[in-house]
Image 1 (cartoon, rainbow, N blue to C red):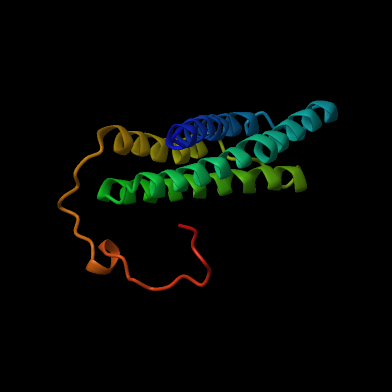
Image 2: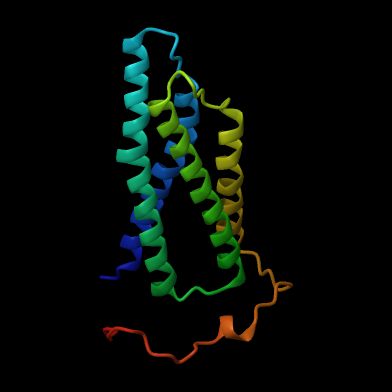
Length: 164
């Protein structure tokens, strides 16, 4: 049995969970109101914290690990993949920023109000749409040239034994 379908299933399932969580968290954060009832604020704060730490972040880790394995199992080293990885980095940056907002709301509820959900949603939607376009269209991107050292193996020895 090939492991590629297994890694694809894990990658896609984790990606859906990660992206869905990143889209939900700004909306959840917009519900934070330290001036409201203490019990409501505590419940919303715990929900956003748990969603970020127990669902979204592990999904991001599984997405990146399974995606990295897929790159090497399939041997896909083409320009559209490198462009996709740039947008994956932007998605990670949005993930970290939203996590920072979640932490600030928990630590300083009176001094920190989360931004309106429009900006975090935009920061998440742009990389998601770009990644989808690149993965589904797989454009040639022949106009982009890479230096030779990026296109050929260097022949160097890794600092550890590599299984065959």
